[in-house]
Length: 454
Ligand SMILES: *[C@@H]1O[C@H](CO)[C@@H](O)[C@H](O)[C@H]1NC(C)=O
Ligand SMILES: *[C@@H]1O[C@H](CO)[C@@H](O)[C@H](O)[C@H]1NC(C)=O
Ligand SMILES: *[C@@H]1O[C@H](CO)[C@@H](O)[C@H](O)[C@H]1NC(C)=O
Ligand SMILES: *[C@@H]1O[C@H](CO)[C@@H](O)[C@H](O)[C@H]1NC(C)=O
Ligand SMILES: *[C@@H]1O[C@H](CO)[C@@H](O)[C@H](O)[C@H]1NC(C)=O
Ligand SMILES: *[C@@H]1O[C@H](CO)[C@@H](O)[C@H](O)[C@H]1NC(C)=O
Ligand SMILES: *[C@@H]1O[C@H](CO)[C@@H](O)[C@H](O)[C@H]1NC(C)=O
View 1: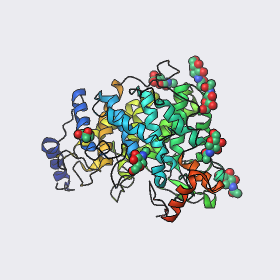
View 2: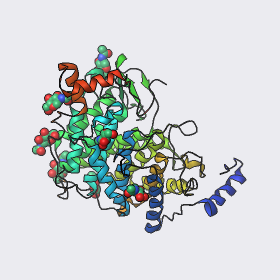
View 3: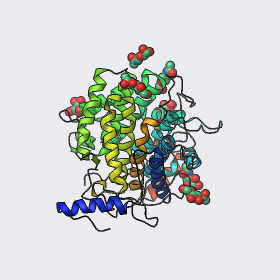
View 4: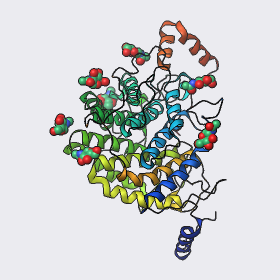
């Protein structure tokens, strides 16, 4: 694609030309059927990357260069796809992937993934399970725990990892041998906060709300949430008591706290405290829009594979916020309409002719193609149906149908971190061989989200 010129006249012509001819994905926002078809197109192109349903491949894995977590994030977006469009095409794939990756302890800590298993990675799968419970996604067979129990499994595992350095918070990495063990990042703490708040809203159990409050307070005290602007920076190192920070502000950090705050706002029946936090995060989030079209912090520069998917999560969390905190609704919907209209104009590339690009503000395909790009466009399209969707279910409302288990994930005899713990403390049991193997091949871990200290 030729980029649009920057002269005003040429720009207008390019814009009109793109509207009339280039838009390989047609989208009429006044027509639900058109929105569903457009989302279906983006979903189809996204799923051309997925091989986990092929014979001999592992369900719930995307091929290189995608890390394990992104497949969990993708399953979450496919649950939303079904929820908003009613299209069940991918539901079997989702169920199979989720149940396979939940692992033997049903807490999304599969041993295969130890190298890339940070708290945030695990939580993206946990939040997908939570979404399944909230939206009433078809229950797994009775022989398996329910979606709610899988989300609780992740929550319980993470509760046990609350860490005393820097006065609290979760570390990024779970295992000391992974790079990033000394990093306390906003997304790991944000996912835990988000999950805790949603579990509180679903179950009515104050214990979850207490953990959400504790996490928010720690983020605030350590200054990862900026007191003047409510911008949320990426993270801090515990080696200097979390005083030096990576100050990048990503959409998904803002979004994960926004939805958690909206869930707490709703859970507290509209408290002034949580309303204030929701409103401040919405205001802070204005930096992620140019004329109501969403942009990521790295756009214009180089976005890595992970970062290219972040707008998908910001979108999905904004959509849920619009419902749980109705006073934010109209503003969010305007951003969805404008962003979706811009985003589909980038969907003109690839073998299918409908693969989407990264920078929606360009209104033309920028050549950046992949799972993240597809997921983000799919979410921004389908989120325009948020008002048509049946509301989230919950036990409080009496509409929750997903089976829960308060003690999920606590019987951790084969979870990856238990094996590691057993190996260092007792030097025997099955964990020892596992640890030795890792040491011998010199695993140093790879950063699942970003290179530390770059
Ligand atoms: C895997 O799923 C895709 C849809 O995303 C489908 O086109 C393909 O046929 C499936 N493969 C198998 C072996 O079922
Ligand atoms: C772990 O890896 C093995 C061997 O590749 C595979 O058979 C199994 O399905 C994987 N398990 C998970 C949970 O990914
Ligand atoms: C370390 O940081 C925490 C959280 O900001 C703070 O409460 C604590 O006083 C700090 N400790 C030292 C020794 O500075
Ligand atoms: C919200 O209101 C309901 C109904 O009045 C009440 O049962 C519930 O305890 C309230 N929740 C909180 C967290 O105050
Ligand atoms: C909580 O969310 C529901 C939608 O699930 C909404 O109808 C209700 O107004 C919200 N409560 C508050 C206090 O905004
Ligand atoms: C509330 O949740 C906590 C934490 O999971 C659990 O220990 C407790 O049993 C739950 N309480 C009720 C009344 O369900
Ligand atoms: C495993 O579970 C037990 C009991 O719930 C708990 O005391 C222990 O700390 C857990 N171990 C790890 C490594 O999380």
